[in-house]
Amino acid sequence: MAELDDIIHQPLRLKIMAALNALPQPTGLEFARLKKLTGATDGNLGAHIETLAKAGYVSVEKAFVGKKPQTTVTATAVGRGAFARHVATLQEIIAGKQV
Image (cartoon, rainbow, N blue to C red; front, side, top):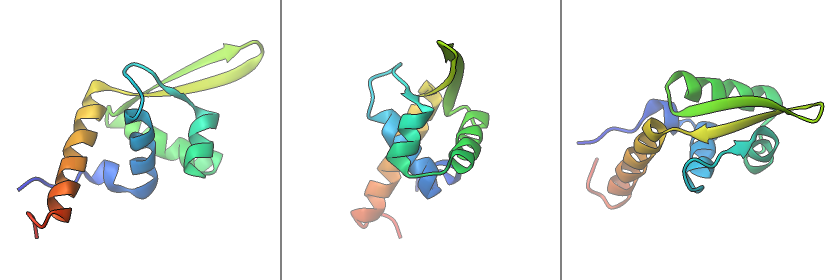
């Protein structure tokens, strides 16, 4: 029986991973766009992105566009695999295949 991924299962991290996995690889999202999509605060979003990055599920690229800092978050291959397994487990639970 497959288990839910504790790192992804947290609601905000699930939203982050869902948003990133909806994009073709290796496309990422800017921090401001992720903030808008998730409704998170800067600090909360940053902390959850850090947790995902430490797990190897996302990569974070920091750059400057003009004089403005820009942070882009991209799902890694490891993160995409973990997300796919997590979603499959959720689908099994919904279908009543797990108790």
